[in-house]
Length: 209
Length: 61
Image (cartoon, rainbow over all chains, first blue to last red):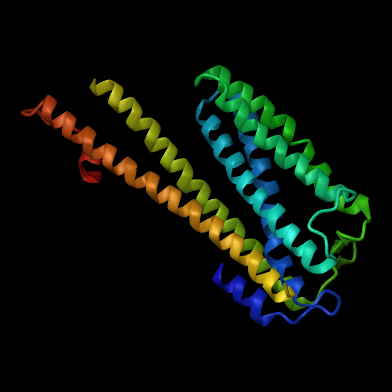
């Protein structure tokens, strides 16, 4: 992560069009992609829960969606800052990409409302899993909106001819993406471990009573 | 605000959020460690003469 920040802030040359603000790209896009990945992972674990009827996937799905929501909120904040720096607006309701990502984010925020409104048990696990699976439909729509929208606020950087940036910018982007993915993975494992130990301790306490 | 300040703000927000998240996880792990110690103590008081506490639990505490 440190290497990615050094590359993004110091090594990479300034963008001719956007200037210094283009450096936000190196953190904003990897975070957004990681957010999509976490939501997708949560939906995959939800599918496994419904398919194999194994309760452990419930916690894994929940933690992945929790991670996705954290990275999603960071995507919205860094994206807004970048928009303000480059185009002078914090938000544009006319941009399909922004609105669709916000819809995806709010959809998964509502996942927590559903989850915590139900009693712990198989009903909650299955209801949450079905809800998480519905949300996965929004991921490709949100991802492809950037290509369909063709608005000024979100130019397409990756197209059929490859990445539309210099080699150093692309290398920085790859390092940053790897770093953010690794960070998300470590946080995912840590949170999952904590929640599993917590559940085990609760069970142990009940057994000792 | 200058463009440089916006860049600093974007990276700063990410840093603060990740730091807060790690702090929350650390606090939770500390609480789990305390609870493990309490349970170990409870198990010891219950059966003082027999060794019923799992080894993993005893090592953590």
